[in-house]
Image (cartoon, rainbow, N blue to C red):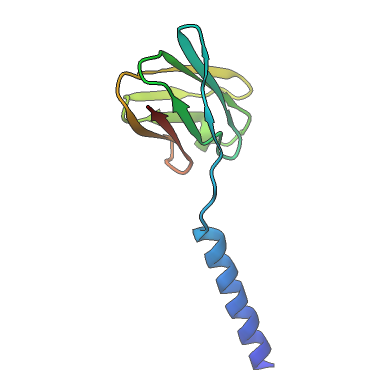
Length: 122
């Protein structure tokens, strides 16, 4: 009986470690360029989808955040590299302008820094 319990406990530990430390393949997307602007919609529901957005350098960009999730954690998005801190109203789209004059990877997060996303400018 002790062997069965030990095996079950070890299996649970392995499963928990795998669940929390697995490498997720994050969904990303390229912004749609329309004339002299580029835009993408990011759904906010238990995180950000898509989590990674590719933008073209030098083309003005708008990220349209649509928040479905009612949690207070996701009611705000913070782009520390751009000095942006915006409220995201539930069930509405909040447009945020991004400076695309510099190449790089720029992370953003919810107000509690629990959920993350990334903007790649190239």
